[in-house]
Amino acid sequence: MTSLSLWLTLLCIGAMTYAIRLSFITFFGKIEMPPLLLRTLRFVPVSVLSAIIFPALFLNANRLNLTLSNARLIAGILAALVAWRTKNVLLTIIVGMAGLWLLQLVVR
Amino acid sequence: MAGSVGLLCRVMVGVISACATYDMTNDHCELYIRYDKAMTTRHAEFVLGIKAELPILLGTIPFGLIYGVVARSAGIPALVVQAMSLIVLAGSAQFVAAQLIGAGVPAGIIILTAVIINLRHALYSASVAPYLKRLNSGWKMLLAYLLTDEAYAVAITHYAQGGNGTRKHWYFFGAGLTLWTSWQASTAVGILLGAQVPASWSLDFTLPLTFIALVVPSLKGRASVAAAATAGVVAVLAADLPLRLGLVVAALIGIGIGIGIEPWDRKRASTSEDKAQVVTHTLSTNESPEITPPGRTGKEAL
Image (cartoon, rainbow over all chains, first blue to last red; front, side):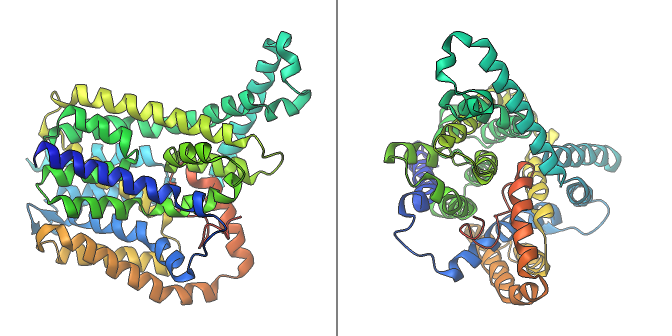
Protein backbone atom coordinates (compact mmCIF):
# COMPACT_ATOMS: atom_id res chain seq x y z
CA MET A 1 0.00 0.00 0.00
CA THR A 2 1.35 3.43 -0.91
CA SER A 3 1.91 6.05 1.73
CA LEU A 4 -0.96 8.19 0.45
CA SER A 5 -3.54 5.39 0.43
CA LEU A 6 -2.33 4.31 3.87
CA TRP A 7 -3.04 7.78 5.25
CA LEU A 8 -6.40 7.95 3.47
CA THR A 9 -7.39 4.55 4.90
CA LEU A 10 -6.42 5.72 8.34
CA LEU A 11 -8.32 8.99 8.05
CA CYS A 12 -11.44 7.20 6.76
CA ILE A 13 -11.44 4.74 9.66
CA GLY A 14 -10.85 7.60 12.11
CA ALA A 15 -13.59 9.82 10.67
CA MET A 16 -16.16 7.02 10.55
CA THR A 17 -15.30 5.82 14.04
CA TYR A 18 -15.68 9.37 15.31
CA ALA A 19 -19.00 9.75 13.52
CA ILE A 20 -20.24 6.54 15.17
CA ARG A 21 -19.16 7.78 18.60
CA LEU A 22 -20.69 11.20 18.10
CA SER A 23 -23.93 9.93 16.52
CA PHE A 24 -26.29 9.60 19.46
CA ILE A 25 -24.53 12.16 21.62
CA THR A 26 -25.43 14.74 18.97
CA PHE A 27 -28.79 13.44 17.81
CA PHE A 28 -30.22 12.31 21.12
CA GLY A 29 -33.93 12.99 21.24
CA LYS A 30 -33.93 14.16 17.63
CA ILE A 31 -34.20 10.79 15.93
CA GLU A 32 -35.66 7.44 16.95
CA MET A 33 -33.57 4.29 16.53
CA PRO A 34 -35.39 1.45 14.79
CA PRO A 35 -35.56 -1.49 17.26
CA LEU A 36 -34.31 -3.97 14.65
CA LEU A 37 -31.11 -1.95 14.22
CA LEU A 38 -30.50 -1.99 17.97
CA ARG A 39 -31.09 -5.75 18.08
CA THR A 40 -28.68 -6.15 15.20
CA LEU A 41 -25.98 -4.11 16.94
CA ARG A 42 -26.11 -6.47 19.89
CA PHE A 43 -24.78 -9.35 17.78
CA VAL A 44 -22.19 -7.33 15.89
CA PRO A 45 -19.25 -7.72 18.29
CA VAL A 46 -19.61 -11.47 19.01
CA SER A 47 -20.11 -12.29 15.34
CA VAL A 48 -17.29 -10.13 13.96
CA LEU A 49 -14.78 -11.15 16.60
CA SER A 50 -15.65 -14.85 16.34
CA ALA A 51 -15.19 -14.61 12.58
CA ILE A 52 -11.66 -13.36 13.30
CA ILE A 53 -10.92 -15.82 16.13
CA PHE A 54 -11.92 -19.11 14.46
CA PRO A 55 -9.70 -18.86 11.35
CA ALA A 56 -6.78 -17.72 13.53
CA LEU A 57 -7.11 -20.91 15.58
CA PHE A 58 -8.24 -23.53 13.05
CA LEU A 59 -6.26 -22.56 9.96
CA ASN A 60 -2.50 -23.04 9.74
CA ALA A 61 -1.11 -21.47 6.54
CA ASN A 62 -4.67 -21.42 5.10
CA ARG A 63 -5.18 -25.16 5.76
CA LEU A 64 -7.66 -26.59 8.25
CA ASN A 65 -5.68 -28.27 11.03
CA LEU A 66 -7.69 -30.19 13.63
CA THR A 67 -4.79 -32.27 14.95
CA LEU A 68 -2.83 -31.96 18.17
CA SER A 69 0.03 -30.43 16.18
CA ASN A 70 -2.04 -27.22 15.92
CA ALA A 71 -0.53 -25.33 18.85
CA ARG A 72 -2.67 -22.24 18.23
CA LEU A 73 -5.90 -24.22 18.48
CA ILE A 74 -4.92 -25.83 21.77
CA ALA A 75 -3.60 -22.56 23.24
CA GLY A 76 -6.77 -20.82 22.08
CA ILE A 77 -9.02 -23.39 23.78
CA LEU A 78 -6.94 -23.02 26.94
CA ALA A 79 -7.35 -19.24 26.79
CA ALA A 80 -11.10 -19.59 26.21
CA LEU A 81 -11.37 -21.70 29.39
CA VAL A 82 -9.48 -19.04 31.35
CA ALA A 83 -11.68 -16.29 29.89
CA TRP A 84 -14.81 -18.25 30.77
CA ARG A 85 -13.74 -18.90 34.38
CA THR A 86 -12.03 -15.59 35.23
CA LYS A 87 -13.37 -12.97 32.76
CA ASN A 88 -9.91 -11.44 33.03
CA VAL A 89 -8.51 -10.06 29.77
CA LEU A 90 -4.89 -9.86 30.87
CA LEU A 91 -4.80 -13.34 32.42
CA THR A 92 -6.39 -14.80 29.30
CA ILE A 93 -3.70 -13.27 27.08
CA ILE A 94 -0.88 -14.36 29.40
CA VAL A 95 -2.10 -17.97 29.69
CA GLY A 96 -2.75 -18.17 25.95
CA MET A 97 0.69 -16.88 24.99
CA ALA A 98 2.47 -19.04 27.60
CA GLY A 99 0.53 -22.05 26.32
CA LEU A 100 1.45 -21.31 22.71
CA TRP A 101 5.16 -20.90 23.48
CA LEU A 102 5.28 -24.14 25.49
CA LEU A 103 3.43 -26.09 22.80
CA GLN A 104 5.68 -24.69 20.07
CA LEU A 105 8.69 -25.94 22.06
CA VAL A 106 7.13 -29.39 22.40
CA VAL A 107 6.00 -29.68 18.77
CA ARG A 108 9.38 -28.72 17.33
CA MET B 1 -20.50 -9.56 40.97
CA ALA B 2 -16.71 -9.47 41.34
CA GLY B 3 -16.75 -6.54 38.96
CA SER B 4 -19.08 -4.52 41.13
CA VAL B 5 -17.05 -5.26 44.27
CA GLY B 6 -13.92 -4.08 42.49
CA LEU B 7 -15.75 -1.01 41.35
CA LEU B 8 -16.96 -0.30 44.85
CA CYS B 9 -13.39 -0.50 46.10
CA ARG B 10 -12.25 1.91 43.41
CA VAL B 11 -15.00 4.35 44.28
CA MET B 12 -14.06 4.12 47.96
CA VAL B 13 -10.42 4.76 47.15
CA GLY B 14 -11.60 7.71 45.11
CA VAL B 15 -13.67 9.08 47.97
CA ILE B 16 -10.79 8.72 50.41
CA SER B 17 -8.36 10.45 48.09
CA ALA B 18 -10.88 13.19 47.38
CA CYS B 19 -11.07 13.79 51.13
CA ALA B 20 -7.27 13.88 51.27
CA THR B 21 -7.26 16.46 48.51
CA TYR B 22 -9.75 18.45 50.53
CA ASP B 23 -7.46 18.42 53.57
CA MET B 24 -4.39 19.41 51.63
CA THR B 25 -5.96 22.38 49.96
CA ASN B 26 -7.38 23.98 53.05
CA ASP B 27 -6.52 27.47 51.89
CA HIS B 28 -8.71 26.91 48.84
CA CYS B 29 -11.47 25.36 50.85
CA GLU B 30 -14.03 27.86 49.63
CA LEU B 31 -13.77 26.00 46.30
CA TYR B 32 -15.00 22.90 47.98
CA ILE B 33 -18.34 22.32 49.51
CA ARG B 34 -18.10 20.63 52.89
CA TYR B 35 -17.85 16.86 53.55
CA ASP B 36 -18.61 14.44 50.73
CA LYS B 37 -19.97 17.23 48.58
CA ALA B 38 -16.33 18.04 47.86
CA MET B 39 -16.74 15.39 45.16
CA THR B 40 -19.08 17.57 43.19
CA THR B 41 -16.42 20.10 42.27
CA ARG B 42 -14.89 19.92 38.82
CA HIS B 43 -11.40 19.20 40.04
CA ALA B 44 -12.49 16.44 42.39
CA GLU B 45 -14.61 14.83 39.66
CA PHE B 46 -11.67 14.97 37.27
CA VAL B 47 -9.30 13.36 39.79
CA LEU B 48 -11.86 10.68 40.66
CA GLY B 49 -12.21 9.85 36.97
CA ILE B 50 -8.45 9.45 36.62
CA LYS B 51 -8.30 7.20 39.67
CA ALA B 52 -11.17 5.05 38.47
CA GLU B 53 -9.41 4.51 35.16
CA LEU B 54 -5.98 3.61 36.57
CA PRO B 55 -6.60 -0.10 37.35
CA ILE B 56 -7.85 -0.64 33.81
CA LEU B 57 -4.52 0.51 32.41
CA LEU B 58 -3.06 -2.79 33.59
CA GLY B 59 -4.89 -4.35 30.65
CA THR B 60 -4.59 -1.57 28.08
CA ILE B 61 -0.90 -0.69 28.36
CA PRO B 62 0.34 -4.17 27.28
CA PHE B 63 -2.34 -4.02 24.59
CA GLY B 64 -0.97 -0.72 23.28
CA LEU B 65 2.58 -2.10 23.40
CA ILE B 66 1.63 -5.16 21.42
CA TYR B 67 -0.30 -3.03 18.93
CA GLY B 68 2.82 -0.92 18.31
CA VAL B 69 4.95 -4.04 17.84
CA VAL B 70 2.46 -5.85 15.59
CA ALA B 71 1.77 -2.80 13.44
CA ARG B 72 5.50 -2.16 12.93
CA SER B 73 6.14 -5.81 12.07
CA ALA B 74 3.29 -5.55 9.51
CA GLY B 75 5.51 -3.03 7.74
CA ILE B 76 3.58 0.13 8.59
CA PRO B 77 5.73 3.28 9.04
CA ALA B 78 6.18 4.39 12.66
CA LEU B 79 4.48 7.72 12.08
CA VAL B 80 1.36 6.04 10.67
CA VAL B 81 1.26 3.56 13.55
CA GLN B 82 1.26 6.40 16.07
CA ALA B 83 -1.17 8.50 14.02
CA MET B 84 -3.61 5.58 14.00
CA SER B 85 -3.59 5.57 17.82
CA LEU B 86 -4.29 9.31 17.77
CA ILE B 87 -6.94 9.34 15.07
CA VAL B 88 -8.76 6.03 15.54
CA LEU B 89 -8.23 5.43 19.28
CA ALA B 90 -9.82 1.95 19.26
CA GLY B 91 -7.58 -1.00 20.10
CA SER B 92 -9.31 -3.91 18.40
CA ALA B 93 -9.96 -2.02 15.17
CA GLN B 94 -6.36 -0.79 15.09
CA PHE B 95 -5.07 -4.33 15.56
CA VAL B 96 -7.18 -5.71 12.76
CA ALA B 97 -6.48 -2.77 10.43
CA ALA B 98 -2.74 -3.14 11.01
CA GLN B 99 -2.84 -6.85 10.22
CA LEU B 100 -4.96 -6.36 7.11
CA ILE B 101 -2.62 -3.63 5.88
CA GLY B 102 0.29 -6.02 6.45
CA ALA B 103 -1.52 -8.74 4.50
CA GLY B 104 -1.99 -6.40 1.54
CA VAL B 105 -5.78 -6.32 1.73
CA PRO B 106 -7.45 -3.52 -0.33
CA ALA B 107 -8.25 -0.30 1.53
CA GLY B 108 -12.02 -0.56 1.11
CA ILE B 109 -12.16 -3.90 2.91
CA ILE B 110 -9.88 -2.65 5.68
CA ILE B 111 -12.07 0.41 6.27
CA LEU B 112 -15.26 -1.68 6.21
CA THR B 113 -13.83 -4.23 8.64
CA ALA B 114 -12.55 -1.60 11.07
CA VAL B 115 -15.82 0.30 10.97
CA ILE B 116 -17.84 -2.89 11.55
CA ILE B 117 -15.69 -3.64 14.58
CA ASN B 118 -16.25 -0.08 15.86
CA LEU B 119 -20.02 -0.17 15.37
CA ARG B 120 -20.43 -1.15 19.01
CA HIS B 121 -19.56 2.43 19.90
CA ALA B 122 -22.99 3.42 18.61
CA LEU B 123 -24.39 1.59 21.63
CA TYR B 124 -22.08 3.48 23.97
CA SER B 125 -23.02 6.74 22.28
CA ALA B 126 -26.73 6.03 22.75
CA SER B 127 -26.12 5.04 26.35
CA VAL B 128 -24.24 8.19 27.45
CA ALA B 129 -26.22 10.62 25.24
CA PRO B 130 -28.97 11.47 27.78
CA TYR B 131 -26.35 12.42 30.37
CA LEU B 132 -24.51 14.71 27.97
CA LYS B 133 -27.50 16.47 26.44
CA ARG B 134 -27.05 19.70 28.44
CA LEU B 135 -23.38 20.10 27.53
CA ASN B 136 -22.25 22.46 24.79
CA SER B 137 -21.13 21.02 21.48
CA GLY B 138 -17.44 21.45 22.35
CA TRP B 139 -17.78 19.11 25.30
CA LYS B 140 -19.86 16.68 23.24
CA MET B 141 -17.20 16.55 20.54
CA LEU B 142 -14.42 16.07 23.07
CA LEU B 143 -16.16 13.30 25.01
CA ALA B 144 -17.21 11.55 21.78
CA TYR B 145 -13.54 11.42 20.79
CA LEU B 146 -12.66 9.89 24.17
CA LEU B 147 -15.56 7.39 24.09
CA THR B 148 -13.48 4.20 24.20
CA ASP B 149 -14.60 0.90 25.68
CA GLU B 150 -12.65 1.52 28.85
CA ALA B 151 -13.64 5.16 29.39
CA TYR B 152 -17.26 4.34 28.67
CA ALA B 153 -17.28 1.51 31.20
CA VAL B 154 -16.02 3.78 33.97
CA ALA B 155 -18.09 6.84 33.06
CA ILE B 156 -21.44 5.09 32.62
CA THR B 157 -21.06 3.45 36.02
CA HIS B 158 -20.49 6.85 37.60
CA TYR B 159 -23.48 8.37 35.81
CA ALA B 160 -25.70 5.44 36.77
CA GLN B 161 -24.94 6.00 40.47
CA GLY B 162 -27.19 9.06 40.40
CA GLY B 163 -26.67 12.11 42.59
CA ASN B 164 -25.68 15.50 41.31
CA GLY B 165 -24.70 14.93 37.70
CA THR B 166 -23.96 18.47 36.60
CA ARG B 167 -20.18 18.06 36.80
CA LYS B 168 -19.84 14.37 36.04
CA HIS B 169 -18.57 15.14 32.57
CA TRP B 170 -15.31 16.09 34.30
CA TYR B 171 -15.14 12.55 35.65
CA PHE B 172 -15.70 11.18 32.13
CA PHE B 173 -13.01 13.54 30.84
CA GLY B 174 -10.55 12.42 33.54
CA ALA B 175 -11.12 8.74 32.76
CA GLY B 176 -10.98 9.28 29.00
CA LEU B 177 -7.85 11.43 29.13
CA THR B 178 -6.07 8.86 31.32
CA LEU B 179 -6.81 6.09 28.87
CA TRP B 180 -5.85 8.32 25.93
CA THR B 181 -2.48 9.20 27.48
CA SER B 182 -1.59 5.60 28.31
CA TRP B 183 -2.66 4.45 24.85
CA GLN B 184 -0.45 7.01 23.06
CA ALA B 185 2.52 6.30 25.33
CA SER B 186 2.26 2.52 25.12
CA THR B 187 1.93 2.71 21.34
CA ALA B 188 5.12 4.78 21.18
CA VAL B 189 7.02 2.27 23.35
CA GLY B 190 5.70 -0.58 21.20
CA ILE B 191 6.97 1.19 18.08
CA LEU B 192 10.42 1.55 19.64
CA LEU B 193 10.50 -2.12 20.67
CA GLY B 194 9.03 -3.24 17.35
CA ALA B 195 12.20 -4.02 15.43
CA GLN B 196 13.62 -6.04 18.33
CA VAL B 197 10.74 -8.48 18.57
CA PRO B 198 11.24 -11.54 16.31
CA ALA B 199 8.33 -13.20 14.49
CA SER B 200 9.00 -16.49 16.30
CA TRP B 201 7.52 -14.92 19.43
CA SER B 202 4.13 -15.23 17.69
CA LEU B 203 2.96 -11.91 19.14
CA ASP B 204 0.31 -11.74 16.43
CA PHE B 205 -1.48 -14.43 18.45
CA THR B 206 -2.32 -11.82 21.12
CA LEU B 207 -5.01 -10.48 18.80
CA PRO B 208 -7.22 -13.62 18.73
CA LEU B 209 -6.43 -14.10 22.42
CA THR B 210 -7.67 -10.62 23.27
CA PHE B 211 -10.82 -11.23 21.30
CA ILE B 212 -11.33 -14.59 23.03
CA ALA B 213 -11.01 -12.75 26.35
CA LEU B 214 -13.71 -10.32 25.26
CA VAL B 215 -16.10 -12.69 23.46
CA VAL B 216 -16.22 -15.69 25.81
CA PRO B 217 -17.53 -13.87 28.92
CA SER B 218 -20.17 -12.13 26.81
CA LEU B 219 -21.68 -15.38 25.54
CA LYS B 220 -24.89 -15.30 27.53
CA GLY B 221 -27.95 -17.00 26.13
CA ARG B 222 -28.38 -19.27 23.13
CA ALA B 223 -28.62 -16.43 20.62
CA SER B 224 -25.14 -15.04 21.24
CA VAL B 225 -23.56 -18.51 21.40
CA ALA B 226 -25.23 -19.44 18.12
CA ALA B 227 -24.21 -16.15 16.50
CA ALA B 228 -20.57 -16.62 17.57
CA ALA B 229 -20.36 -20.29 16.58
CA THR B 230 -22.02 -19.73 13.20
CA ALA B 231 -19.87 -16.72 12.35
CA GLY B 232 -16.73 -18.62 13.37
CA VAL B 233 -17.49 -21.77 11.37
CA VAL B 234 -18.54 -19.79 8.29
CA ALA B 235 -15.37 -17.70 8.54
CA VAL B 236 -13.25 -20.88 8.49
CA LEU B 237 -15.19 -22.34 5.55
CA ALA B 238 -15.16 -19.03 3.64
CA ALA B 239 -11.52 -18.19 4.34
CA ASP B 240 -10.61 -18.67 0.67
CA LEU B 241 -12.92 -15.91 -0.53
CA PRO B 242 -10.97 -12.98 -2.01
CA LEU B 243 -10.39 -9.66 -0.21
CA ARG B 244 -11.10 -11.22 3.19
CA LEU B 245 -14.78 -11.09 2.30
CA GLY B 246 -15.21 -14.29 4.29
CA LEU B 247 -15.03 -12.20 7.46
CA VAL B 248 -17.88 -9.92 6.39
CA VAL B 249 -20.03 -12.77 5.07
CA ALA B 250 -19.47 -14.80 8.24
CA ALA B 251 -20.28 -11.84 10.50
CA LEU B 252 -23.50 -11.07 8.63
CA ILE B 253 -24.67 -14.69 8.77
CA GLY B 254 -23.79 -14.85 12.48
CA ILE B 255 -25.79 -11.67 13.18
CA GLY B 256 -28.75 -13.08 11.22
CA ILE B 257 -28.69 -16.32 13.23
CA GLY B 258 -28.47 -14.35 16.48
CA ILE B 259 -31.50 -12.20 15.63
CA GLY B 260 -33.42 -15.30 14.51
CA ILE B 261 -32.80 -17.18 17.76
CA GLU B 262 -33.20 -14.20 20.09
CA PRO B 263 -37.03 -14.50 20.54
CA TRP B 264 -36.55 -17.91 22.21
CA ASP B 265 -34.02 -16.42 24.59
CA ARG B 266 -36.33 -13.59 25.44
CA LYS B 267 -39.18 -15.92 26.34
CA ARG B 268 -37.06 -17.58 28.96
CA ALA B 269 -35.78 -14.41 30.58
CA SER B 270 -38.28 -12.37 32.52
CA THR B 271 -38.23 -8.58 32.38
CA SER B 272 -36.86 -8.26 35.90
CA GLU B 273 -33.96 -10.55 35.09
CA ASP B 274 -33.22 -8.37 32.11
CA LYS B 275 -32.99 -5.31 34.30
CA ALA B 276 -30.69 -7.07 36.73
CA GLN B 277 -28.49 -8.02 33.80
CA VAL B 278 -28.31 -4.43 32.70
CA VAL B 279 -26.86 -3.44 36.04
CA THR B 280 -24.30 -6.24 36.19
CA HIS B 281 -23.35 -5.57 32.59
CA THR B 282 -22.69 -1.95 33.37
CA LEU B 283 -20.66 -2.79 36.43
CA SER B 284 -18.70 -5.70 35.03
CA THR B 285 -17.55 -3.90 31.94
CA ASN B 286 -14.13 -3.16 33.42
CA GLU B 287 -12.72 -6.49 32.36
CA SER B 288 -14.72 -7.13 29.22
CA PRO B 289 -16.31 -3.91 28.12
CA GLU B 290 -16.30 -4.51 24.40
CA ILE B 291 -18.99 -7.09 24.02
CA THR B 292 -21.33 -6.38 26.87
CA PRO B 293 -23.64 -3.66 25.68
CA PRO B 294 -25.94 -2.68 28.52
CA GLY B 295 -29.11 -4.52 27.73
CA ARG B 296 -30.65 -4.77 24.32
CA THR B 297 -30.55 -1.06 23.70
CA GLY B 298 -28.57 1.76 25.17
CA LYS B 299 -31.71 3.63 26.15
CA GLU B 300 -33.14 0.70 28.06
CA ALA B 301 -30.04 0.61 30.20
CA LEU B 302 -31.06 3.91 31.69
